[in-house]
Length: 453
Image (cartoon, rainbow, N blue to C red; front, side):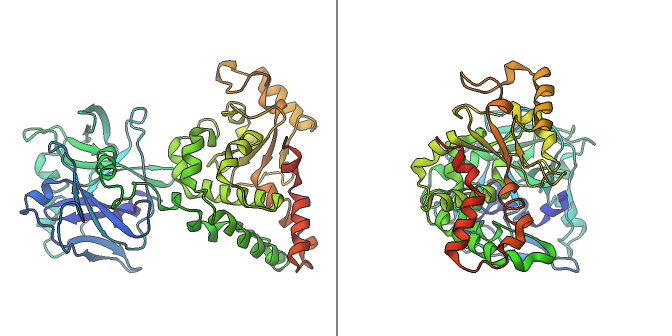
């Protein structure tokens, strides 16, 4: 994904710009913008214009704002000096491809400013589809008033080149995914000619939302609200020419996800409970917003439900996490490359001889090593190498744990699909009874039970 994928999210809001986002619901959308775009138009909002690709080109679309009733569909910050506004509009599908990025203290460049500056509109009065991307290398400077940041744009554009960008998105691309950090307000000052802009972080919009919890959902991916948004993507088993052999088990597993979907457990609940302990060492927190980690969690909880013949209650999550730790990485290579990060991951609370399930989407390159155990010769050799290089100050372990690769067993998440099902497709081809399949799966998944106290 490149920055052009963000075009649909950029909008024209009166004389300025805005950003269209889907919050943690599929009932409505937000348009984030600068408040002065509305104030300068007498408090009214004209039709908001955005552009959608129809296969042949970009075509303009309108979102009609029926009213700007404060506290109903139009919201501003309590602090009048904070120049932001949130407009709540009817749901439109397809605005869920952009997540939030709050980690500005250690990431200071490669941001993008997107919007519709006035000068471009005037040059193309009959072609508002002229889209503006200011630059690929916005530099982030020190925060202003806790909520506002200054940024500098290489090329030193003058204020006329940026006017109309107010409310435009401040975006970043990480591993092909779009992230938003805030919206632009204005140039740093009317006389500023060095390309600096002022923008406001998403935390300002969080403060608006917190004042209206019954009306506004958090600016978080909608799939964090419920596993129901992910169930169609779970257990996406593929067996090529042997697809028919595993069709029954594939549908059975997807049906079993309903137990998790209907439970009180949600991705947001798990995220809030375990936070960064969910991630492999060096993984950034924004990974917790991605879909894939929660698809893996849906599969993991479904497998546990099958083994225990019952729904896993939310109250059991802590105990399960101390017996079986699921850690996720968005790394796309072989998991042997992640051994060092496995050593330094957060294993606080995980008992000795516990099991670590590694959530990584790429199956092992050798097609065989789905389990890392000190009794396996080539794993024992890898353990020795890691122990020689060990940085003890980075270990996150409890007393009684000497070295994660020796005290825990690690298992690749794909073991439960590729190894236990796809590679044994012939063993499933004639199973068409639920109870027979259930016993078969319990036997394949018993490694999880073997590691419980």
